[in-house]
Image (cartoon, rainbow over the protein chains, first blue to last red):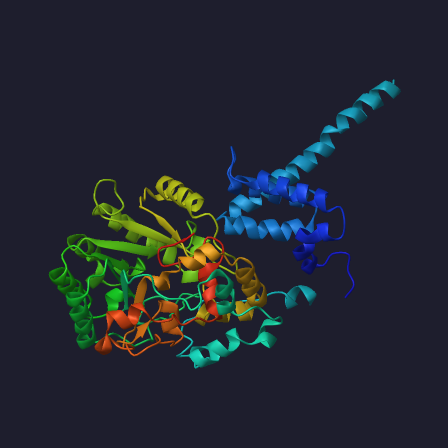
Length: 111
Length: 363
């Protein structure tokens, strides 16, 4: 079946450089690897952040990848779901905080 | 309907595959599945082909340090992933004469570690006698008992096991797939987590896992599903933090073990539709360093009938060691040290990522 998203395509991600702009792809994957390495944050914590971002940006590839990755890193169901809630509440908050602009503009325009 | 088509349900079995007369209860059938590209939906390289370019084929032992004895398939649990297909309906138990053959070998050859596994090894009626005899033969050898924890609470006659273990300075290695009840019980059966916690507290109470006691309590983590373990050190820290905070439990080390695609775990993979992607992940995660350190290079495994195997997984696939020393009666250290190890597609489970062994990561 034709589809814009195909889970098999996730496996091709690492070879996007073979289509073109190889150096840029290499730079990206080097950066990707460095970011997710153990640092001031553990790679486990980073994986939970990535899981939340995957949901906020609604990327099915990333949701598959970071559901697997968080499970592999031993995250519990509660930790995974709480991470998604952080993403959800940030997205909701980001929408709502913009209402201050609406309120400002409304006050400017109304008596 | 589309949604339903993706659902799967693998209930905890009440009977072993063998008792169900399930096709996968037959080891020859398992090996056919493991080598069937059609079942896999793709072609994956043969395991031994991966060893050739890195100079590890034929794979041979480095030295025989660990003598792992599977004293029987009987168990009080029926875990969904069990590679032994163990359970209460399995009656295969190592006889006292066969245990005596093991003792005879221990008298002649010095191993660093005796590793007792099952089933629940404590359910072998000669278990305590055997430990006492090992201690008589070799007072200082490291003895591991792979205790499933719940056996300690299963019957009054097992309640004193922590004291027995302590008396004989046994290293206790116990499975706890996760520090939450839901993920542990989904693999090992309802109520297993609660009983495991009680058993760990009983072991702690006699000194196991406590600093300075010299009584070693190690836990085994293996994924409750079709994913690989990752980051043993990080997981150990997390297990220690949670078990201490919630249940006041202490332990020494956490061993991360990859689920090997045989027996009941193979059944789970096939039923849940994860077989092909799991095998592909194992193959893509092949790590030459882990391959060089696989446990079959320093371990010898003995089955309940006294036959010798390269590891407990080969034992469960009925793949006996190469060469003339196939049984305890024919034990010959030189022959066994020089044997080519029997390999098959399930071996990818021990070489993926940081590798996997009965003692956890190897790379």
